[in-house]
Length: 214
Image (cartoon, rainbow, N blue to C red; front, top):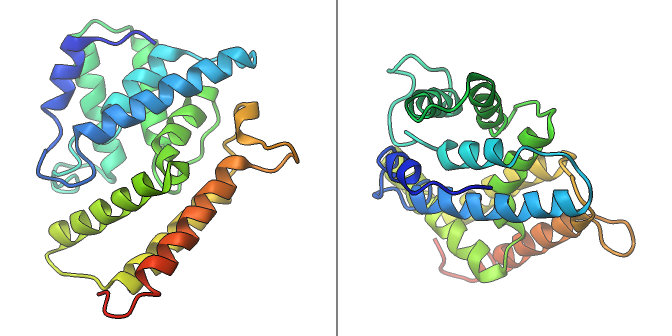
């Protein structure tokens, strides 16, 4: 996976640093998760185009702060894919690669169908934080809550937020996006799923179990 400083500088301008979560730092976190996943794919002999994964993760939340509907796009992912296509064309990336990047970005939508290894890798890298160290997972959850409140202009109680989050996480974990042996423990169970579920349980116990948290 070849990093490109000029391209990353161009991509960073498409993210709003005022957003607590869907900012350029998140994109770079996803890129790093993608790098690790690509290495694991290669170790396991899973064919994958590292450039497609890199480009898609770099732009997968571009323009998140903008009103995609007003701009003529059905979803934030469609808008991000359009921005990626525009910038990658400026950087003389080939049309076949650009088409694969756009498809991989669209694969990050909640209800998307993901078929290629690149689409699976991008979706998995975007969700990598679910199975991160608990402190990282908790901090991400808190940033997402602040961002939701910022974008909607209202506050949401922790219990309601965690119930919403748990439903979303359970949906994502119901999908099979395993690419490498990393996702299985010694019993053949998904280590990724088990860590994500443990993180969610601990967050619930900390935030909802504590009186006075709102």
